[in-house]
Length: 614
Image 1 (cartoon, rainbow, N blue to C red):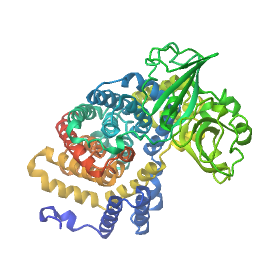
Image 2: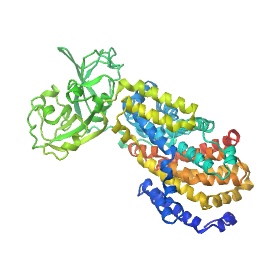
Image 3: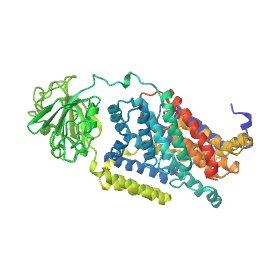
Image 4: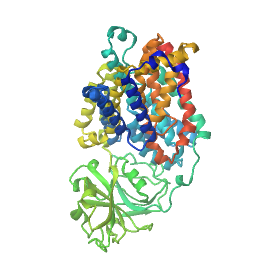
Protein backbone atom coordinates (compact mmCIF):
# COMPACT_ATOMS: atom_id res chain seq x y z
CA UNK A 1 0.00 0.00 0.00
CA UNK A 2 1.51 3.36 -1.07
CA UNK A 3 1.35 6.06 1.66
CA UNK A 4 -1.07 8.81 0.60
CA UNK A 5 1.57 11.51 1.06
CA UNK A 6 3.61 9.85 -1.73
CA UNK A 7 0.73 10.15 -4.22
CA UNK A 8 1.84 13.32 -6.00
CA UNK A 9 0.09 14.51 -9.21
CA UNK A 10 3.04 13.26 -11.29
CA UNK A 11 2.67 9.77 -9.85
CA UNK A 12 -1.11 9.72 -10.30
CA UNK A 13 -0.98 10.80 -13.96
CA UNK A 14 1.78 8.54 -15.25
CA UNK A 15 1.33 7.25 -18.82
CA UNK A 16 0.66 3.58 -19.50
CA UNK A 17 4.28 3.03 -20.59
CA UNK A 18 5.48 4.19 -17.17
CA UNK A 19 3.18 1.76 -15.37
CA UNK A 20 4.37 -1.01 -17.69
CA UNK A 21 7.96 -0.12 -16.82
CA UNK A 22 7.09 -0.10 -13.11
CA UNK A 23 5.62 -3.59 -13.49
CA UNK A 24 8.78 -4.83 -15.20
CA UNK A 25 10.92 -3.29 -12.44
CA UNK A 26 8.88 -5.03 -9.74
CA UNK A 27 9.19 -8.35 -11.57
CA UNK A 28 12.94 -7.89 -11.89
CA UNK A 29 13.37 -7.01 -8.22
CA UNK A 30 11.34 -10.07 -7.29
CA UNK A 31 13.45 -12.28 -9.54
CA UNK A 32 16.70 -10.90 -8.20
CA UNK A 33 15.60 -11.28 -4.57
CA UNK A 34 14.38 -14.81 -5.25
CA UNK A 35 17.88 -15.69 -6.43
CA UNK A 36 16.99 -18.95 -8.19
CA UNK A 37 17.89 -17.52 -11.61
CA UNK A 38 21.13 -15.70 -12.39
CA UNK A 39 21.07 -11.92 -12.27
CA UNK A 40 22.28 -11.73 -15.87
CA UNK A 41 19.34 -13.79 -17.12
CA UNK A 42 16.87 -11.75 -15.02
CA UNK A 43 18.13 -8.42 -16.41
CA UNK A 44 18.18 -9.73 -19.99
CA UNK A 45 14.59 -10.89 -19.54
CA UNK A 46 13.68 -7.40 -18.29
CA UNK A 47 15.25 -5.76 -21.34
CA UNK A 48 13.36 -8.19 -23.58
CA UNK A 49 10.04 -7.35 -21.89
CA UNK A 50 10.62 -3.61 -22.28
CA UNK A 51 11.53 -4.19 -25.91
CA UNK A 52 8.39 -6.27 -26.51
CA UNK A 53 6.23 -3.60 -24.86
CA UNK A 54 7.67 -0.94 -27.16
CA UNK A 55 9.08 1.12 -24.29
CA UNK A 56 12.63 1.00 -25.73
CA UNK A 57 14.00 0.24 -29.18
CA UNK A 58 16.41 -2.62 -30.00
CA UNK A 59 19.28 -0.12 -30.25
CA UNK A 60 18.44 1.32 -26.83
CA UNK A 61 18.11 -2.16 -25.31
CA UNK A 62 21.65 -2.98 -26.41
CA UNK A 63 23.37 0.38 -25.97
CA UNK A 64 24.67 -0.57 -22.51
CA UNK A 65 26.90 -3.23 -24.03
CA UNK A 66 28.66 -0.54 -26.10
CA UNK A 67 29.20 1.70 -23.08
CA UNK A 68 32.89 2.49 -22.37
CA UNK A 69 32.36 1.88 -18.65
CA UNK A 70 31.27 -1.71 -19.26
CA UNK A 71 34.27 -2.36 -21.53
CA UNK A 72 36.62 -0.83 -18.97
CA UNK A 73 35.33 -3.18 -16.26
CA UNK A 74 36.04 -6.18 -18.50
CA UNK A 75 39.56 -4.99 -19.29
CA UNK A 76 40.37 -4.49 -15.62
CA UNK A 77 39.67 -8.17 -15.04
CA UNK A 78 42.44 -8.96 -17.53
CA UNK A 79 44.84 -6.61 -15.72
CA UNK A 80 44.04 -8.41 -12.47
CA UNK A 81 44.66 -11.77 -14.18
CA UNK A 82 48.19 -10.64 -15.07
CA UNK A 83 48.84 -9.74 -11.44
CA UNK A 84 47.45 -13.07 -10.27
CA UNK A 85 49.31 -15.29 -12.74
CA UNK A 86 52.67 -13.66 -11.97
CA UNK A 87 52.22 -13.97 -8.22
CA UNK A 88 52.57 -10.19 -7.86
CA UNK A 89 50.00 -10.07 -5.10
CA UNK A 90 51.80 -12.85 -3.20
CA UNK A 91 55.05 -10.92 -3.47
CA UNK A 92 53.46 -7.75 -2.13
CA UNK A 93 51.20 -9.38 0.44
CA UNK A 94 53.72 -11.77 2.00
CA UNK A 95 55.94 -9.20 3.76
CA UNK A 96 52.93 -7.07 4.70
CA UNK A 97 50.93 -9.90 6.24
CA UNK A 98 53.94 -11.20 8.18
CA UNK A 99 53.36 -13.44 11.20
CA UNK A 100 51.01 -11.65 13.63
CA UNK A 101 50.45 -13.15 17.06
CA UNK A 102 46.85 -12.07 17.74
CA UNK A 103 43.63 -12.07 15.68
CA UNK A 104 43.43 -8.27 16.04
CA UNK A 105 46.90 -7.79 14.53
CA UNK A 106 46.10 -10.34 11.84
CA UNK A 107 43.03 -8.38 10.79
CA UNK A 108 44.91 -5.09 10.88
CA UNK A 109 47.65 -6.53 8.65
CA UNK A 110 45.05 -8.01 6.30
CA UNK A 111 42.40 -5.32 5.90
CA UNK A 112 44.67 -2.31 5.42
CA UNK A 113 46.66 -3.61 2.41
CA UNK A 114 43.53 -5.15 0.89
CA UNK A 115 41.70 -1.81 1.10
CA UNK A 116 44.65 0.06 -0.41
CA UNK A 117 45.08 -2.49 -3.22
CA UNK A 118 41.33 -2.47 -3.96
CA UNK A 119 41.44 1.25 -4.61
CA UNK A 120 43.57 0.58 -7.70
CA UNK A 121 42.61 -2.95 -8.74
CA UNK A 122 38.97 -3.93 -9.19
CA UNK A 123 37.97 -5.34 -5.83
CA UNK A 124 36.40 -8.58 -7.09
CA UNK A 125 39.69 -9.91 -8.54
CA UNK A 126 41.48 -8.67 -5.41
CA UNK A 127 39.41 -11.00 -3.24
CA UNK A 128 39.92 -13.83 -5.74
CA UNK A 129 43.69 -13.30 -5.55
CA UNK A 130 43.81 -13.03 -1.77
CA UNK A 131 41.66 -16.07 -0.99
CA UNK A 132 44.40 -18.68 -1.66
CA UNK A 133 47.06 -16.43 -0.09
CA UNK A 134 44.92 -15.95 3.00
CA UNK A 135 44.11 -19.64 3.29
CA UNK A 136 47.75 -20.67 3.60
CA UNK A 137 48.64 -17.66 5.77
CA UNK A 138 45.82 -18.39 8.22
CA UNK A 139 46.85 -22.03 8.51
CA UNK A 140 50.48 -21.14 9.16
CA UNK A 141 49.51 -18.66 11.88
CA UNK A 142 46.66 -20.74 13.36
CA UNK A 143 43.85 -18.24 12.73
CA UNK A 144 40.28 -19.16 11.88
CA UNK A 145 39.30 -18.38 8.31
CA UNK A 146 35.76 -17.56 9.51
CA UNK A 147 37.25 -14.59 11.33
CA UNK A 148 39.11 -13.40 8.25
CA UNK A 149 37.11 -14.02 5.07
CA UNK A 150 34.22 -11.61 5.74
CA UNK A 151 36.61 -8.78 6.78
CA UNK A 152 38.55 -9.53 3.58
CA UNK A 153 35.44 -8.93 1.47
CA UNK A 154 34.40 -5.83 3.43
CA UNK A 155 37.89 -4.29 3.26
CA UNK A 156 37.96 -4.81 -0.52
CA UNK A 157 34.57 -3.10 -0.86
CA UNK A 158 35.69 -0.18 1.32
CA UNK A 159 38.86 0.33 -0.69
CA UNK A 160 36.96 0.18 -3.96
CA UNK A 161 34.85 3.17 -2.92
CA UNK A 162 37.88 5.47 -3.02
CA UNK A 163 38.74 5.67 -6.73
CA UNK A 164 37.15 5.59 -10.15
CA UNK A 165 38.56 2.14 -11.01
CA UNK A 166 38.27 0.55 -7.56
CA UNK A 167 34.91 -1.05 -8.31
CA UNK A 168 32.76 -1.64 -11.36
CA UNK A 169 29.99 0.34 -9.63
CA UNK A 170 31.95 3.58 -9.80
CA UNK A 171 32.70 3.03 -13.48
CA UNK A 172 29.05 2.28 -14.18
CA UNK A 173 27.83 5.42 -12.39
CA UNK A 174 30.47 7.45 -14.21
CA UNK A 175 29.27 6.04 -17.53
CA UNK A 176 25.68 6.91 -16.60
CA UNK A 177 26.77 10.48 -15.81
CA UNK A 178 28.42 10.83 -19.22
CA UNK A 179 25.34 9.39 -20.91
CA UNK A 180 23.06 11.74 -18.93
CA UNK A 181 25.08 14.81 -19.91
CA UNK A 182 25.26 13.78 -23.58
CA UNK A 183 21.54 13.04 -23.77
CA UNK A 184 20.28 16.04 -21.84
CA UNK A 185 18.18 18.55 -23.75
CA UNK A 186 20.05 21.21 -21.83
CA UNK A 187 23.49 19.77 -22.15
CA UNK A 188 25.27 22.95 -21.18
CA UNK A 189 23.21 23.32 -18.01
CA UNK A 190 23.67 19.68 -17.11
CA UNK A 191 27.41 19.88 -17.64
CA UNK A 192 27.61 22.87 -15.32
CA UNK A 193 26.00 20.99 -12.45
CA UNK A 194 27.20 17.45 -13.15
CA UNK A 195 30.64 16.35 -14.26
CA UNK A 196 32.10 12.84 -14.74
CA UNK A 197 34.18 11.48 -11.88
CA UNK A 198 37.94 11.97 -11.87
CA UNK A 199 40.28 9.27 -10.56
CA UNK A 200 39.99 10.48 -6.96
CA UNK A 201 36.68 12.39 -6.99
CA UNK A 202 35.04 9.82 -4.73
CA UNK A 203 38.01 9.73 -2.35
CA UNK A 204 36.59 12.73 -0.49
CA UNK A 205 33.89 10.39 0.80
CA UNK A 206 35.49 7.02 0.15
CA UNK A 207 38.67 7.54 2.17
CA UNK A 208 36.95 8.73 5.40
CA UNK A 209 34.33 6.00 4.95
CA UNK A 210 37.05 3.37 4.48
CA UNK A 211 38.93 4.53 7.58
CA UNK A 212 35.75 4.50 9.67
CA UNK A 213 34.78 1.11 8.22
CA UNK A 214 38.16 -0.49 8.89
CA UNK A 215 38.09 0.81 12.46
CA UNK A 216 34.64 -0.73 12.91
CA UNK A 217 35.84 -4.08 11.53
CA UNK A 218 38.80 -4.20 13.92
CA UNK A 219 36.71 -3.28 16.96
CA UNK A 220 33.47 -5.16 16.26
CA UNK A 221 34.92 -8.41 14.90
CA UNK A 222 35.45 -9.75 18.41
CA UNK A 223 31.72 -9.72 19.19
CA UNK A 224 29.84 -9.74 15.89
CA UNK A 225 31.73 -12.18 13.67
CA UNK A 226 30.56 -15.82 13.89
CA UNK A 227 32.48 -18.04 16.28
CA UNK A 228 34.62 -20.95 15.23
CA UNK A 229 32.94 -24.25 14.58
CA UNK A 230 34.00 -27.77 13.87
CA UNK A 231 34.52 -27.02 10.18
CA UNK A 232 37.39 -24.72 11.07
CA UNK A 233 39.43 -27.47 12.61
CA UNK A 234 41.93 -29.23 10.45
CA UNK A 235 40.69 -32.54 9.23
CA UNK A 236 43.10 -35.17 10.35
CA UNK A 237 41.65 -37.65 7.90
CA UNK A 238 42.40 -35.44 4.89
CA UNK A 239 44.50 -36.89 2.10
CA UNK A 240 48.19 -36.89 2.90
CA UNK A 241 50.62 -36.81 0.00
CA UNK A 242 54.30 -37.53 -0.15
CA UNK A 243 56.03 -34.96 -2.33
CA UNK A 244 59.59 -33.78 -2.93
CA UNK A 245 60.67 -30.30 -4.00
CA UNK A 246 64.10 -29.19 -5.17
CA UNK A 247 65.49 -25.84 -4.02
CA UNK A 248 66.67 -23.71 -6.95
CA UNK A 249 69.55 -21.23 -6.58
CA UNK A 250 67.19 -18.26 -6.89
CA UNK A 251 64.77 -19.39 -4.21
CA UNK A 252 64.30 -16.95 -1.31
CA UNK A 253 64.65 -19.86 1.16
CA UNK A 254 68.33 -20.47 0.27
CA UNK A 255 70.59 -19.72 3.21
CA UNK A 256 67.74 -19.53 5.69
CA UNK A 257 67.01 -21.96 8.47
CA UNK A 258 63.93 -24.17 8.18
CA UNK A 259 62.18 -21.99 10.74
CA UNK A 260 63.20 -18.70 9.08
CA UNK A 261 61.93 -20.00 5.74
CA UNK A 262 58.52 -20.67 7.29
CA UNK A 263 58.75 -24.42 6.60
CA UNK A 264 58.48 -25.58 10.22
CA UNK A 265 55.20 -26.46 11.96
CA UNK A 266 53.21 -25.95 8.79
CA UNK A 267 49.55 -26.91 9.35
CA UNK A 268 48.71 -30.09 7.52
CA UNK A 269 52.32 -30.45 6.34
CA UNK A 270 55.39 -32.22 7.71
CA UNK A 271 58.99 -31.85 6.52
CA UNK A 272 60.00 -35.49 6.65
CA UNK A 273 63.62 -35.17 5.50
CA UNK A 274 66.16 -33.25 3.44
CA UNK A 275 68.12 -35.09 0.76
CA UNK A 276 71.49 -33.45 0.05
CA UNK A 277 74.05 -34.99 -2.31
CA UNK A 278 74.85 -38.33 -0.66
CA UNK A 279 73.42 -37.31 2.71
CA UNK A 280 69.87 -37.67 3.99
CA UNK A 281 68.91 -35.49 6.95
CA UNK A 282 66.06 -36.88 9.01
CA UNK A 283 64.45 -35.39 12.14
CA UNK A 284 65.16 -31.99 10.59
CA UNK A 285 66.08 -29.36 13.21
CA UNK A 286 64.51 -25.86 13.11
CA UNK A 287 67.96 -24.28 12.71
CA UNK A 288 68.95 -26.51 9.78
CA UNK A 289 70.13 -24.27 6.91
CA UNK A 290 68.72 -24.82 3.44
CA UNK A 291 71.17 -25.02 0.54
CA UNK A 292 70.73 -24.83 -3.24
CA UNK A 293 69.76 -28.19 -4.81
CA UNK A 294 68.48 -29.55 -1.50
CA UNK A 295 65.51 -31.87 -1.97
CA UNK A 296 62.83 -31.20 0.65
CA UNK A 297 60.55 -34.20 1.21
CA UNK A 298 57.14 -33.30 2.66
CA UNK A 299 54.10 -35.24 3.77
CA UNK A 300 50.85 -33.27 3.89
CA UNK A 301 47.42 -32.34 2.55
CA UNK A 302 47.00 -31.39 -1.09
CA UNK A 303 46.18 -27.75 -0.26
CA UNK A 304 49.45 -27.40 1.60
CA UNK A 305 51.42 -29.15 -1.15
CA UNK A 306 49.95 -26.75 -3.72
CA UNK A 307 50.81 -23.75 -1.49
CA UNK A 308 54.43 -24.95 -1.31
CA UNK A 309 54.75 -25.06 -5.09
CA UNK A 310 53.76 -21.41 -5.30
CA UNK A 311 56.93 -20.45 -3.40
CA UNK A 312 59.49 -19.15 -5.85
CA UNK A 313 62.32 -21.57 -6.54
CA UNK A 314 60.72 -24.75 -5.13
CA UNK A 315 60.30 -27.16 -8.03
CA UNK A 316 59.00 -30.76 -8.00
CA UNK A 317 61.81 -33.29 -8.15
CA UNK A 318 60.33 -34.74 -11.30
CA UNK A 319 63.37 -32.92 -12.72
CA UNK A 320 62.88 -30.16 -15.26
CA UNK A 321 59.21 -31.08 -15.30
CA UNK A 322 58.31 -28.10 -17.45
CA UNK A 323 60.86 -29.03 -20.10
CA UNK A 324 59.84 -32.69 -20.04
CA UNK A 325 56.20 -31.78 -20.55
CA UNK A 326 57.04 -29.54 -23.47
CA UNK A 327 56.37 -26.14 -21.98
CA UNK A 328 57.05 -23.70 -19.17
CA UNK A 329 55.75 -24.63 -15.70
CA UNK A 330 53.13 -21.88 -15.59
CA UNK A 331 51.31 -23.67 -18.42
CA UNK A 332 51.21 -26.94 -16.46
CA UNK A 333 48.12 -27.88 -14.44
CA UNK A 334 47.79 -29.82 -11.20
CA UNK A 335 45.58 -32.89 -11.47
CA UNK A 336 44.38 -35.54 -9.01
CA UNK A 337 43.97 -39.03 -10.52
CA UNK A 338 42.84 -42.20 -8.70
CA UNK A 339 44.38 -45.45 -9.95
CA UNK A 340 41.79 -48.05 -11.01
CA UNK A 341 42.00 -51.84 -10.65
CA UNK A 342 42.18 -52.11 -14.44
CA UNK A 343 45.12 -49.73 -14.76
CA UNK A 344 48.33 -51.09 -16.35
CA UNK A 345 50.18 -49.21 -13.59
CA UNK A 346 48.85 -51.48 -10.84
CA UNK A 347 51.71 -53.18 -9.00
CA UNK A 348 54.33 -51.25 -10.96
CA UNK A 349 56.63 -48.61 -9.52
CA UNK A 350 56.21 -45.04 -10.72
CA UNK A 351 59.64 -45.16 -12.35
CA UNK A 352 59.12 -48.50 -14.12
CA UNK A 353 55.62 -47.61 -15.23
CA UNK A 354 56.98 -44.91 -17.58
CA UNK A 355 54.14 -42.65 -16.50
CA UNK A 356 55.53 -39.64 -18.40
CA UNK A 357 55.67 -41.37 -21.77
CA UNK A 358 52.23 -43.00 -21.40
CA UNK A 359 50.25 -40.05 -20.11
CA UNK A 360 52.35 -36.96 -20.84
CA UNK A 361 52.23 -36.14 -17.13
CA UNK A 362 54.54 -36.39 -14.12
CA UNK A 363 53.70 -37.79 -10.69
CA UNK A 364 54.78 -35.35 -7.99
CA UNK A 365 52.97 -36.82 -4.95
CA UNK A 366 51.09 -39.95 -3.86
CA UNK A 367 48.31 -40.50 -1.31
CA UNK A 368 47.34 -43.93 -0.01
CA UNK A 369 44.51 -44.12 2.49
CA UNK A 370 46.15 -41.97 5.14
CA UNK A 371 49.31 -44.11 5.16
CA UNK A 372 52.63 -42.31 4.95
CA UNK A 373 54.62 -44.08 2.27
CA UNK A 374 58.35 -44.25 2.90
CA UNK A 375 61.22 -44.29 0.46
CA UNK A 376 61.74 -42.42 -2.78
CA UNK A 377 58.78 -41.30 -4.85
CA UNK A 378 59.89 -43.19 -7.97
CA UNK A 379 60.12 -46.48 -6.04
CA UNK A 380 56.50 -46.48 -4.85
CA UNK A 381 54.53 -49.39 -6.29
CA UNK A 382 51.03 -48.27 -7.16
CA UNK A 383 47.85 -49.96 -5.94
CA UNK A 384 44.17 -49.50 -6.83
CA UNK A 385 42.78 -46.49 -5.01
CA UNK A 386 46.10 -44.65 -4.84
CA UNK A 387 45.57 -40.96 -5.54
CA UNK A 388 48.29 -39.34 -7.61
CA UNK A 389 48.97 -35.62 -7.68
CA UNK A 390 50.15 -34.91 -11.23
CA UNK A 391 51.60 -32.08 -13.21
CA UNK A 392 50.15 -32.32 -16.69
CA UNK A 393 49.52 -30.21 -19.75
CA UNK A 394 46.17 -28.46 -19.97
CA UNK A 395 43.47 -30.85 -21.15
CA UNK A 396 44.73 -33.94 -19.31
CA UNK A 397 41.56 -34.22 -17.21
CA UNK A 398 39.37 -33.99 -20.30
CA UNK A 399 41.37 -36.65 -22.18
CA UNK A 400 41.47 -39.22 -19.39
CA UNK A 401 38.21 -38.51 -17.54
CA UNK A 402 36.59 -41.64 -19.04
CA UNK A 403 39.74 -43.76 -19.17
CA UNK A 404 39.65 -47.25 -17.60
CA UNK A 405 43.08 -46.49 -16.10
CA UNK A 406 41.62 -44.07 -13.52
CA UNK A 407 38.55 -44.11 -11.32
CA UNK A 408 38.50 -40.33 -11.09
CA UNK A 409 40.42 -37.46 -12.69
CA UNK A 410 40.06 -33.91 -11.33
CA UNK A 411 41.95 -30.78 -12.39
CA UNK A 412 42.80 -28.42 -9.54
CA UNK A 413 42.27 -24.69 -10.16
CA UNK A 414 45.17 -22.49 -11.21
CA UNK A 415 48.57 -23.12 -12.72
CA UNK A 416 51.21 -25.22 -10.99
CA UNK A 417 53.39 -22.20 -10.39
CA UNK A 418 53.07 -18.44 -10.98
CA UNK A 419 55.36 -16.61 -13.42
CA UNK A 420 57.46 -15.10 -10.63
CA UNK A 421 60.00 -13.50 -12.98
CA UNK A 422 57.29 -11.36 -14.58
CA UNK A 423 55.83 -10.02 -11.32
CA UNK A 424 57.78 -6.70 -11.58
CA UNK A 425 56.48 -6.26 -15.14
CA UNK A 426 52.87 -6.76 -14.03
CA UNK A 427 53.27 -4.31 -11.17
CA UNK A 428 54.86 -1.73 -13.51
CA UNK A 429 51.92 -2.07 -15.94
CA UNK A 430 49.46 -1.53 -13.10
CA UNK A 431 51.29 1.53 -11.78
CA UNK A 432 51.47 3.00 -15.27
CA UNK A 433 47.76 2.47 -15.85
CA UNK A 434 46.81 4.08 -12.55
CA UNK A 435 49.07 7.08 -13.22
CA UNK A 436 47.63 7.61 -16.70
CA UNK A 437 44.01 7.31 -15.55
CA UNK A 438 44.74 9.78 -12.76
CA UNK A 439 46.08 12.20 -15.40
CA UNK A 440 43.22 11.69 -17.89
CA UNK A 441 40.24 9.85 -16.32
CA UNK A 442 38.21 10.50 -19.47
CA UNK A 443 40.54 8.10 -21.30
CA UNK A 444 40.18 5.28 -18.75
CA UNK A 445 39.02 2.84 -21.44
CA UNK A 446 42.08 3.51 -23.62
CA UNK A 447 44.52 3.11 -20.74
CA UNK A 448 42.79 -0.03 -19.44
CA UNK A 449 42.95 -1.51 -22.94
CA UNK A 450 46.66 -0.70 -23.15
CA UNK A 451 47.30 -2.30 -19.75
CA UNK A 452 45.33 -5.44 -20.67
CA UNK A 453 47.22 -5.81 -23.95
CA UNK A 454 50.46 -5.17 -22.09
CA UNK A 455 49.71 -8.04 -19.72
CA UNK A 456 49.09 -10.38 -22.65
CA UNK A 457 52.00 -9.25 -24.86
CA UNK A 458 54.51 -9.51 -21.99
CA UNK A 459 53.14 -12.98 -21.16
CA UNK A 460 52.07 -11.95 -17.67
CA UNK A 461 48.92 -13.82 -18.64
CA UNK A 462 48.05 -15.78 -21.76
CA UNK A 463 45.16 -15.02 -24.09
CA UNK A 464 43.11 -18.03 -22.81
CA UNK A 465 43.76 -16.91 -19.22
CA UNK A 466 42.70 -13.38 -20.09
CA UNK A 467 39.45 -14.61 -21.63
CA UNK A 468 38.73 -16.89 -18.67
CA UNK A 469 39.38 -14.10 -16.15
CA UNK A 470 36.53 -11.86 -17.35
CA UNK A 471 33.38 -12.07 -15.22
CA UNK A 472 30.95 -12.15 -18.11
CA UNK A 473 27.90 -12.34 -15.83
CA UNK A 474 28.84 -9.00 -14.27
CA UNK A 475 29.21 -7.37 -17.69
CA UNK A 476 25.86 -8.75 -18.88
CA UNK A 477 24.12 -7.44 -15.74
CA UNK A 478 25.56 -3.97 -16.27
CA UNK A 479 24.89 -3.84 -20.01
CA UNK A 480 21.32 -5.11 -19.75
CA UNK A 481 20.48 -2.76 -16.87
CA UNK A 482 21.22 0.37 -18.94
CA UNK A 483 18.08 -0.13 -21.02
CA UNK A 484 16.02 -0.40 -17.85
CA UNK A 485 17.39 2.89 -16.52
CA UNK A 486 16.66 4.58 -19.84
CA UNK A 487 13.06 3.31 -19.77
CA UNK A 488 12.51 4.65 -16.25
CA UNK A 489 13.84 8.05 -17.26
CA UNK A 490 12.01 8.32 -20.61
CA UNK A 491 8.56 7.27 -19.38
CA UNK A 492 8.62 9.72 -16.47
CA UNK A 493 8.65 6.94 -13.86
CA UNK A 494 11.94 8.12 -12.38
CA UNK A 495 10.73 11.71 -12.26
CA UNK A 496 7.49 10.73 -10.54
CA UNK A 497 9.28 8.61 -7.91
CA UNK A 498 11.80 11.40 -7.34
CA UNK A 499 8.97 13.90 -6.93
CA UNK A 500 7.37 11.67 -4.32
CA UNK A 501 10.65 11.40 -2.41
CA UNK A 502 11.21 15.16 -2.54
CA UNK A 503 7.61 15.90 -1.50
CA UNK A 504 7.88 13.51 1.46
CA UNK A 505 11.29 14.55 2.86
CA UNK A 506 11.40 18.24 1.85
CA UNK A 507 10.13 19.46 5.24
CA UNK A 508 13.04 17.68 6.92
CA UNK A 509 15.75 19.84 5.33
CA UNK A 510 18.10 19.75 2.29
CA UNK A 511 20.09 16.75 3.54
CA UNK A 512 16.98 14.60 3.87
CA UNK A 513 16.66 14.04 0.10
CA UNK A 514 20.29 12.93 -0.04
CA UNK A 515 19.74 10.59 2.90
CA UNK A 516 16.64 9.15 1.21
CA UNK A 517 18.64 8.33 -1.93
CA UNK A 518 21.34 6.64 0.16
CA UNK A 519 18.84 4.56 2.14
CA UNK A 520 16.80 3.44 -0.88
CA UNK A 521 19.92 2.62 -2.92
CA UNK A 522 21.51 0.75 -0.01
CA UNK A 523 18.34 -1.31 0.46
CA UNK A 524 18.26 -2.12 -3.27
CA UNK A 525 21.93 -3.11 -3.08
CA UNK A 526 21.29 -5.70 -0.36
CA UNK A 527 18.46 -7.16 -2.45
CA UNK A 528 19.56 -6.98 -6.09
CA UNK A 529 23.37 -6.42 -6.07
CA UNK A 530 25.48 -3.29 -6.45
CA UNK A 531 25.49 -2.62 -10.20
CA UNK A 532 21.79 -3.31 -10.67
CA UNK A 533 20.97 -0.98 -7.78
CA UNK A 534 23.15 1.79 -9.26
CA UNK A 535 21.44 1.62 -12.66
CA UNK A 536 17.94 1.40 -11.16
CA UNK A 537 18.47 4.38 -8.88
CA UNK A 538 20.51 6.70 -11.11
CA UNK A 539 17.59 8.36 -12.96
CA UNK A 540 15.69 8.67 -9.67
CA UNK A 541 18.69 10.30 -7.97
CA UNK A 542 19.18 12.81 -10.79
CA UNK A 543 15.49 13.73 -10.88
CA UNK A 544 15.46 14.07 -7.08
CA UNK A 545 18.38 16.52 -7.23
CA UNK A 546 16.58 18.60 -9.87
CA UNK A 547 13.28 18.53 -7.96
CA UNK A 548 15.02 19.67 -4.77
CA UNK A 549 16.92 22.37 -6.66
CA UNK A 550 20.27 20.95 -5.49
CA UNK A 551 23.55 20.19 -7.35
CA UNK A 552 23.61 16.77 -9.01
CA UNK A 553 27.18 15.73 -8.18
CA UNK A 554 26.53 15.08 -4.43
CA UNK A 555 23.66 12.80 -5.45
CA UNK A 556 25.77 10.93 -8.00
CA UNK A 557 28.56 10.42 -5.46
CA UNK A 558 26.10 9.33 -2.77
CA UNK A 559 24.52 6.90 -5.22
CA UNK A 560 27.93 5.36 -6.04
CA UNK A 561 28.86 4.96 -2.37
CA UNK A 562 25.45 3.56 -1.38
CA UNK A 563 25.45 1.08 -4.27
CA UNK A 564 28.78 -0.26 -3.01
CA UNK A 565 27.59 -0.54 0.60
CA UNK A 566 26.38 -4.11 0.13
CA UNK A 567 27.62 -5.30 3.51
CA UNK A 568 24.36 -6.62 5.02
CA UNK A 569 23.59 -9.31 2.45
CA UNK A 570 25.59 -12.06 0.71
CA UNK A 571 24.04 -11.04 -2.64
CA UNK A 572 24.71 -7.35 -2.05
CA UNK A 573 28.19 -7.60 -3.48
CA UNK A 574 29.92 -10.32 -5.49
CA UNK A 575 32.85 -10.57 -3.07
CA UNK A 576 30.41 -11.51 -0.30
CA UNK A 577 29.26 -14.49 -2.34
CA UNK A 578 32.90 -15.43 -2.97
CA UNK A 579 33.67 -15.74 0.77
CA UNK A 580 30.29 -17.08 1.94
CA UNK A 581 30.95 -20.73 1.07
CA UNK A 582 34.64 -20.98 2.09
CA UNK A 583 33.90 -19.07 5.31
CA UNK A 584 30.85 -21.15 6.22
CA UNK A 585 28.74 -18.03 6.69
CA UNK A 586 24.95 -17.77 6.85
CA UNK A 587 22.95 -14.75 5.56
CA UNK A 588 22.28 -13.68 9.16
CA UNK A 589 26.05 -13.35 9.71
CA UNK A 590 26.20 -10.64 7.05
CA UNK A 591 23.22 -8.84 8.59
CA UNK A 592 24.72 -8.91 12.08
CA UNK A 593 28.22 -7.77 11.08
CA UNK A 594 27.40 -5.74 7.96
CA UNK A 595 24.30 -3.70 8.84
CA UNK A 596 26.08 -1.44 11.38
CA UNK A 597 28.76 -0.85 8.73
CA UNK A 598 26.10 0.28 6.22
CA UNK A 599 24.85 2.79 8.80
CA UNK A 600 28.39 4.08 9.46
CA UNK A 601 29.07 4.55 5.73
CA UNK A 602 25.72 6.32 5.31
CA UNK A 603 26.41 8.78 8.12
CA UNK A 604 29.88 9.60 6.77
CA UNK A 605 28.53 10.02 3.23
CA UNK A 606 25.59 12.28 4.16
CA UNK A 607 27.77 14.49 6.38
CA UNK A 608 30.51 14.99 3.79
CA UNK A 609 28.90 14.89 0.31
CA UNK A 610 27.00 18.23 0.43
CA UNK A 611 30.14 20.10 1.50
CA UNK A 612 32.77 18.71 -0.88
CA UNK A 613 30.65 18.44 -4.06
CA UNK A 614 28.54 21.60 -3.85
